[in-house]
Length: 204
Image (cartoon, rainbow, N blue to C red; front, side):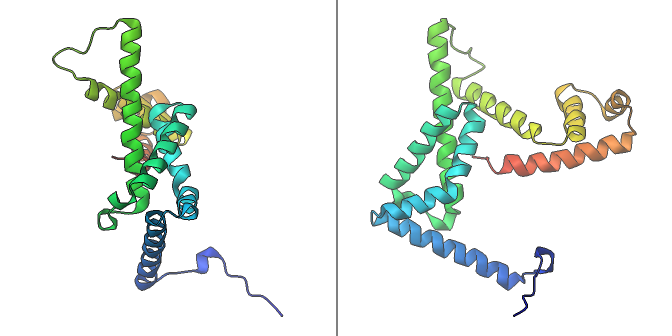
């Protein structure tokens, strides 16, 4: 019997088909969440296999430490196991919910690490114009941005680094890279769109 191979490019989903996939995914999530509510460890394991990687990736971007990220992952899924009823499917997907918990836990860890470092170094607390939470937020976000920029292609990364981190204008970037100004603008715009996609995945 002959087999007809169909490439991914030949597959087209109608809006109804896309909606059906989304509905199926939410139905699967609801089934797994109910399993956790019923204390089914297999359901929790399925959720971990589906979203554990994304949770760890976010925690590692914020903390820049794999060991601390592992602790955050464990904390996230233990928290979910203990209180699955706090998940509200009407407010977003289970993935988004778990990533939100992960971000909060990771920032708490950064807060603790900053406070510990200050105690060890006898560093005075922030002045009236700053607060600890703002400092933590700035540190975690700067690390996330640096990691996101590192994922760009070399041409886009160089152009964005010069424009945003070195404070150059488009004209100055073009002269430095010895490229047409239009090319530089195109690379920066393309890179910024990619950064927006990456950073949007880890927004709290």
